[in-house]
Length: 209
Image 1 (cartoon, helix red, strand yellow):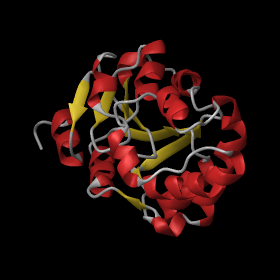
Image 2 (cartoon, rainbow, N blue to C red):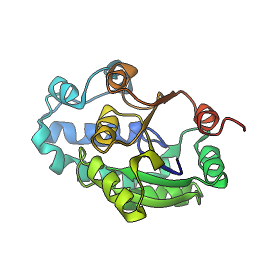
Image 3 (cartoon, rainbow, N blue to C red):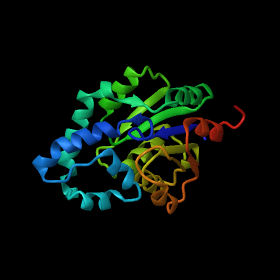
Image 4 (cartoon, helix red, strand yellow):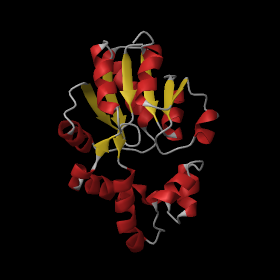
């Protein structure tokens, strides 16, 4: 395994508060319910579709709402930080010879803005999926570009949609517990690894350190 692809929001970037702000700013206009940080914690066991029903959000409006949320991210990127320990983790992986990339449904420009802000030089490639459920196509394209097989790649993420995408293209998945979705959702999809801190991720992939 040489290539490690990371999800962005909820895995590398602590951005839930910013997405919540954008959601709530749009809630009244589009007639869905606002959320609190407590709501996010209490609904970790629910799928995106179940959360959508709970907050009266019609899924067909995603193509309208997501660009507005990502624009809010761009406008307020200074309020976003990486989770504690992420920068050191990425640097360690790169120094140990891993090729580190990001595959996210957030905008590529947003991701690159935060990487520059946080002085991250260890990420070699950033890929964005135009569809929230389309990461499998992007991961497949990445493997084709690099002429590699699924066993040479690991995807690291926090959401059940991430592992479902990985299972479609036979790429091993590592779940991180500090993000959006709870383990109840992830467990049935059989992640290869489960980690609870960036340090544990390093120890799992590079045991000798």
